Amino acid sequence: MANQSDLKQLNKSRILAHIRANAAQSRAAIADALSLDRKSVTNLVSELIAQDWLCEVGIQLKRRGRPGTLLELDRSKHLFLGLHLSENLVHGVLINLHGEILSQQSMPFALPADLKAIKSSLLQVYESLAVAVFTELSAIGLVLPGVLDFEAGKILRSVNLPALDGLAPQLLLPETLPVPLYIEESSRAKALAELWFGLGRSHASFVCIDLGIGIGAGIVAERRLHGGSYAGEIGHVQIEPGGRACACGHLGCLEAYVSESSLCQELSRILTRTVCSLQELELGQLNAEAEELLCQAGRCLGRGLAPLVNILCPPLLVLHGNLTRFETLLMPALMQGLEEAALPSCLNRVQLEISGFGAEAAALGAAAIPFEQIFAVNNGFAMI
Ligand SMILES: [Zn+2]
Image (cartoon, rainbow, N blue to C red; front, top):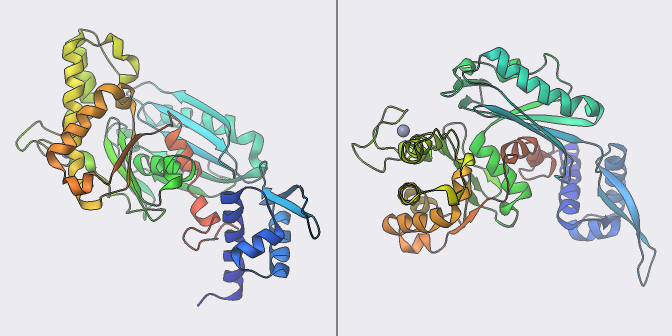
């Protein structure tokens, strides 16, 4: 059973979550909405103001009774830094409690990259975003490419940045950090960005599909990320028994047909020029063969996602990644692949959407890792 101190912290988290969901609120409105007595709310709010979580923003005039002072989440204190180390780039965002991006920065590095080059880019982004707001910083989230061991706190394997293999992530940042460091994997971080700031705000359960050099799924069930570092490996669902060799050692995985690197390789051959990223291409630059390749990729993706649709029947599937730039080709083909392989009763309940976020998605999710504790999703309150 929770003790008094736990209960107090939980109620503080509930107050923050209520204000986040309903904009500026008076103490009386908070007390009514959360079924708390007004004196307790007054005391808890005083503490939250003293700790810079809340601020008073104006007066609410009423027809009857005393005017109430409106409270809002403080915009300028408790800032969160999200860093995304991808295969050739570091992207960072600094956000406040409202999820507003206050500044962002990116820094590429050349491949093949050694540890020194990766660390140098990461430090430049960290310093440009964090140094000026050191005293307001509450947490840092770091998204890493590869398989992570969350319990041991290390990177098990990074296929595209082997210099990271076996490394403890804190060694990539300054030795002494002013605040806690959280680590996360890319697909899961993108799911967090959707959950707190994107399409997931109106869905308690959904799945994010990250279409990049690797293909992963971030699964959110009842507003919580599901599973750990080994969950969500949808890219290694077999869609073609005995088919193309995959980096995982098996044959015919979805990733061997739809990963950005395999598509770029095929497009380079078809367009007779080197294509390093799907970002380099516009729909109008594609010939009929290239368009057919992307349609095939969409159908493969549909077949690969069908088991997930059948097993989880998520109300929402959100697609991330450069392949979504070719939405008009991709989506009909993806739907065709799904219709060929998924149960209609499941598929009919799944809404398919393309994320509204761009390159900032994973960094944004990284910055929001502590939000679960702050806003009482898991009866959490460790940070308050
Ligand atoms: Zn595989």
